[in-house]
Amino acid sequence: MARILVLEDEAEIRSLMREALEADGHAVKEAVNGMHIEESVADYRPDIVITDLLMRGRDGFEAITALRRQYPGLRILAVSGGGGAVGVDDALGTATKLGADATLAKPFRIPTLIGAIAYLMGRPASAREQARAKAQPH
Image (cartoon, rainbow, N blue to C red; front, side, top):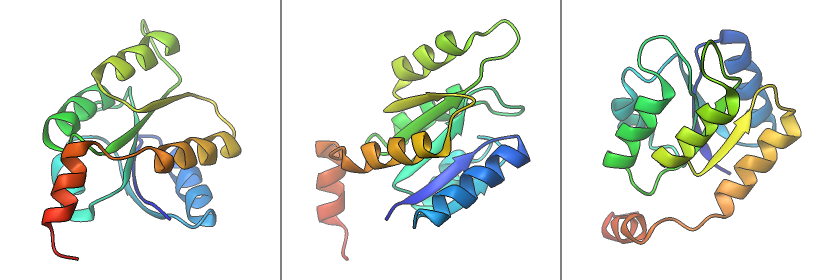
């Protein structure tokens, strides 16, 4: 199964996602926001990052931008319920433009989350990521 890093500032939502993903057989690590996303990815080496978009500290938009720059083959799922002046469709559309591979509008059902992870696991890694994986000893 997948190694997943969940960035979500709401503890209850973060915990629910972790529990559901672990029940589906995935290994999950949690983070409260994107402040140290590059280090978290380097340490944990996830297959997928799930990021909320509107968070305190470093938000999901900034996290996606940083991850695309440093880890172009990493699969990213952006989630958002919108907020304030930012509508959910605008937030998710911006995330896609920044490089998110898939998006989910909050609230979502657990089977929808599990389906999005399955979809992302079925996506081939970029050519650059495949070359990097071949160069690393297993």
